[in-house]
Amino acid sequence: MNRIYLISIFMILITLCSYGQDNVLVGLNGPAYGVKIKTNFPNYTGNWARGFSITNESDNQYYFGLGSYGACTNGVSSIIYSYLGRQFNDAFMYFKPDGKIGIGTNNPNSLLSVSSATGGGIITVIDTEPNETTANPYISFYHGSDPANLSRLGYIGYGSSSNTDLYVTNDKGGLKFRDNTGEVMYVKNGNVGIGTTSPTRDIQIHRSTSLAGIEVVNTNATGKSVILLGEANTLHRYIYLGYLNSSYNSSNAFQPASGVLYSGASNGMRLISRSHISLFSGGFEKINERLRITPSGHIGIGTTDPGLYKLAVEGKIGAHEIVVTTDGWSDFVFNKDYKLKDLEEVESFIEENNHLPDIPSEKEVIENGIALGEMDAKLLQKIEELTLYMIEMNKEVKALKNENVELREKNVELESEIKKMKSE
Image 1 (cartoon, rainbow, N blue to C red):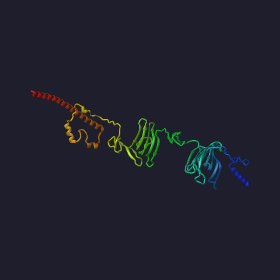
Image 2: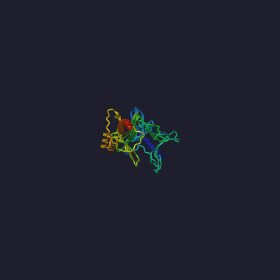
Image 3: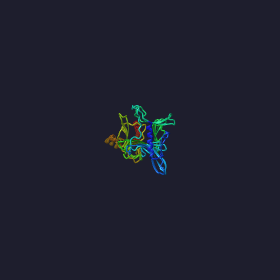
Image 4: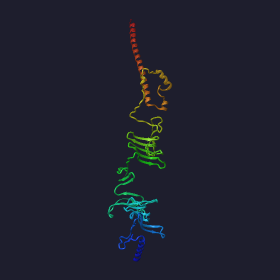
């Protein structure tokens, strides 16, 4: 066996020495040194590669090799990287002089860089546990200088016995998710923060952009949000409910939507709708529309069609006090030039129309209702007219009383004269 080993070493020496006399050193008496290959290129400027390769029988197909690749300037060489692979320019793994290792890349920018140009998985973690339900493949992160006493920082993998959930765990603190703008999302103490590293709510969003918020999109209708919560600027907050504009542009937070709940520092709270606004009650089993605001601003309570009325109520209204404003009042009745109808004329109108002059008939009230302010003014007009009639009648009564007194006095005188005449 030793003879075979010595013969093999001898054959390697003969092969290597054929390329240069003192460029290959074999430390037979010093196994710590093994085999050395010098990069000795006197007066040479360019690149070089040295190593061991396994090829096919025709030496035209490389199976595996290991070696180094470098550069040389006027005979002074330097290393660019070492490699494991087929050849120096077709390797699987690269080792840089600064200790960085590249898999699939000859220019690693970290201690370990992995690159794949063919797609598919880059790193695969396999747990060979036969029972799938108890397998828990994961990648752990540790800290410490003593391999026997390391502190685990966290892990990524399948940490549960059910083997159905992927865990991203930090044993020391929260989880940070970053992009090229910095820290985007932070998970700490069970709270999720977006734009903040200290969330105190289940979900908390802090944004410095003008269009911050949450958007829930219906993917079956491009550009149509179901819910959009956000902030147009520092003064205006909004909730879009059922976004309708297919040409949605996030730079315009106030494009038409089916519903918007909006608040502003100087404008209070607004509820905006492209169509009418309705309020329902009764639960999902017996849901009923209780109030509707039409696009023209008319309000219906108990009715979905307020018609031309600013407020239409189908039912009774209870109020402690109602104030009705009007453009005029009925005091014109007391003007000197007001022509008061004769009672005979009023009597004739009533007999013919069955209602007072200037007062709507029963049929008109049933069909059109009454305007409280206008009707109060008309009723007051009739009261004032009745007052004038009573004043006039009072004058006539006083005149009749005076006439009656005079007639009594004359009657006394006549009776006195009759008695006198009888006594004679």
